[in-house]
Length: 359
Ligand code: 1CP
Image (cartoon, rainbow, N blue to C red):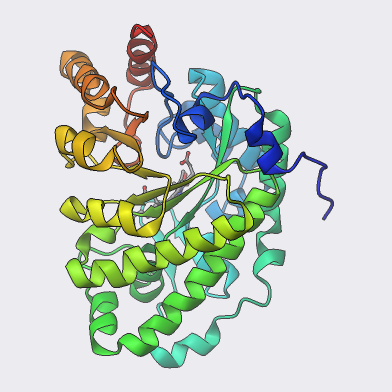
């Protein structure tokens, strides 16, 4: 595949940028704060639902650069968000490792569950980049198509969250199979996690080489881990991934999202080396301002249900978030992905209200 000749990322970052998200990620205070929303491309937009019909299988959609570029751009055109997040899914990694993933309408992802250590030999990194090359082409296409003020975010699932899908065979309510493998036989579970740490770091490095300007690591199910396990299976893998990224790209900011980590958010920001942390809606704002914002840039944390329900309660909460986190570097976002039944008018109302805030 041909790489477009872009100036190196460090040269790009050294130049004054009109990208508000990158300004905040380099610790400049920007007021009003930049806005983007987790899962901002997708089913809540009628234009996405129409585009989605062009591929039967969801992963075929993700592996089609033309469709994936278009899906990424749709929310940017509509709302002028400060960042675009690459349209893909966290489950392309198990798929690329040889554990075929399918999405059945309405029931979510299905994988041939790994039953234990004997199944590890079924996974291989041999075709990782070949398999993921359409995603890299999407990243390149996006750098060409995006307006100059819009930052391109690459992403991957964190090893723990991805491992839960691989071991459970799909979504789960309690992750009991994954947790008991990790307790019963932590040596072989570590082998799975090591494989995922390396594949995820390699994948994110490629996304950056092809044009991603920052990356987010989604640890959506980190919050089910008790303290010691959280350190071992969420913090430590994130620390290793951040360190690999920083070795190659010291100036590319990394955003971590250990959803549901509670008080352990504090350990996560100190120990992983992330530049920014995305907080879920249960994190108290004042605590985040006092405890987290002194170490890292804070992103969040509007309740996605409140965005979907709208009205004056939404306005009040937007103001409270802006006021409490507004003294330090802040990126406005949700506490978790946007819900499919969210009225697009509520998103427009959110953007207007934030942008009207005096600078
Ligand atoms: O047909 C469809 O439209 C399927 C719905 C859909 C979409 C739009 C899925 C299936 N994934 C996506 C895109 C997606 N997924 C993006 C890019 C879009 C954007 O952000 O604008 C991203 C960043 C993700 C990340 C993702 N996928 C996460 C982490 C974030 C989070 O919400 O916690 C997770 C856990 C997944 C797994 C996944 N993908 C899709 C489903 C139905 C699921 C399972 C979710 C679950 O177990 O509850």
